Image (tube, one colour):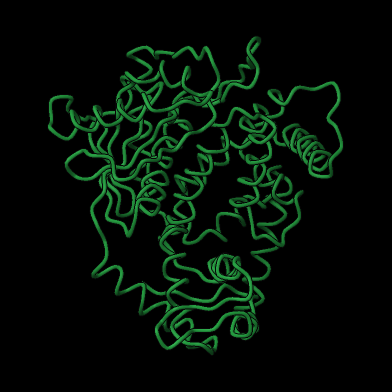
Length: 414
């Protein structure tokens, strides 16, 4: 692996400041002016470097060790230490963990095994295996110790089917982050291929849009099933969720579409970006806070439809390009952009539910994401895909552009 500086950051400046705020003693201990010095700089340096494919938890470990390699560090030395330390950790310090996720709404859809990057996902965990028996026992023991408000919700989720992700990681946080990112890609792919519904909840507000979700009480285990640490991960979960069971015909269609899309993604020139988009698509519409869903859906558009310097209307035109009624959908996009700007600047959105905005955002993104993930015309890079989205649709405009290109070709031949 290769760790690099993120463009625009002045790491040397911050390293010089760090050297004045903490002292490395001969016995390897650290003296600090304030107790939060290390955390502040670990956070900054984790942001200022790029370690593609590694979790934030892993990068934090690397950064913390690199910061304390010498009293006075230059940018070049720091990056060199980061790469050296990361390679040592990858070679000598990884340990096998198994991350357990209860999955809600996936019965009949999820089968077999999957792999995203270096993480395997076991969707068919045998209830008779020694690991499963002990893991369930340990999870039940942990559940009985819980004394806080979410107990009643968790009580109704204890019998959900479990998905297990074996992960090699430096600690439980690294393991969980790797596994959650991988399974979010899988769930994001299923969510995208499960239809383009417009249904808005009539009762019970604050329900996630996704129909297949990671339920609360996610845990990290040792290979024998024992819990690795007395903590668990909990995402907000509404009361009274009713699981929707798709028909057998729908299951077959969804699985067929998912398999085709997965094969396309593996061959994408922008595969890494596409996989991140899948995970973000899942997390955007898996939230109970539908204002957050709407805003995360907008951020997904920004992350996939162009470079960060391009204006919002360009991104909207690219997303609207894949609808038959392109001009109409562009107007819908402008509406979503205006609402997003109002919310971002702290102004109320009067007379409209966040459910409506979140569903409109999901519907607006879906055709674009289908094309973004499957690359139907085999473009060589993501810029070609964006250029394609910028081309005119009307036949007279296309013919005029083709004529001009022919003129250029003829001129250059002369």
